[in-house]
Image (cartoon, rainbow, N blue to C red):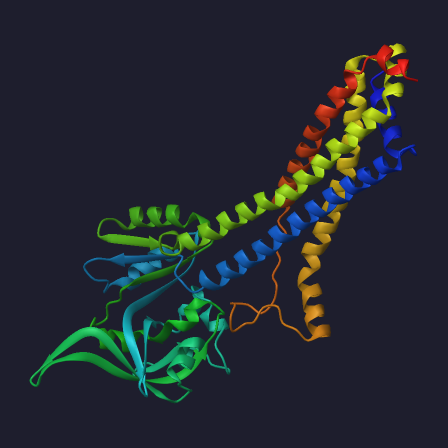
Length: 413
């Protein structure tokens, strides 16, 4: 008896109906569900791709966590060795950061100049992988006052390799001739480009040169850490500070750049909810389809009732029919969405090559291609939401079918 709703519901789904308009609406509902699910998977995958690229580029340049000490950080080697012993830390490197004004031939631009140890910086930053023209971080020799500029920053200052730029610090030097701002001329030895906003306001110099310029002796501003799991940065930072004892402070990326990534996640959720409306519209079409089927099959319903079918059996028949339409659309949509999410980068690149157009300009956006990263958790959520909407859309028409009175339906036959 339990197989009757399944058998009859599937038969109604594939049977040739007298009213071809019902078949058309049913097919439209199935196609709408398929397109809605596919588009939702594709759009969320593209947003995941942009999120991943942004995280890799920006969080590859800024510290996952920075450890500082209020009264100076002269004996930093011992602290760095202690932190390196932790299994949740990938790398440790010293730094000095100072805000200043870079000047060249009448052009000025504010920038953050990082003094780094060229031998250790690659452990905590991706900048070494984005240097141009064969440059390496080890080319920042102490005492030569070389500087590496972001690509956009160099273009704004109109400088090339070998040019001199003047760094003006927001500090004053007292000399016999009076009080003068502290400044130093650096030689541009190269540029880097990570394809993010950091290219326009970031520069690198040797740590020892910056120690001389900032008059900090052998001290540093802090230690920059790269973590195995950047999403646990607050907890790891707190644990490190507990181990180091009083006098130390920590600043992780969630406090410096967390708002940016929270905004991306919020945008992803809102777009996901808006695109879910497409799936809801397709589910609403299932309601229309089933209501017309109920009207068309009133005599069949009456006969089943006279043969002993209960109202619950009638309900299950039409729930099966509606779910069949929804499930077929969802399966096709998931298949299409997954294929598109995995190949959209290649498809867009092929279109750009064939039609000689460019969708993303690297001078405007931080990347020149369309990234896509498929996350199966998103696919699971979309599938579950579509199944739920499909199931809910069958309840009212199935309830209407169960309320059909056999005598009233057969009287007009």
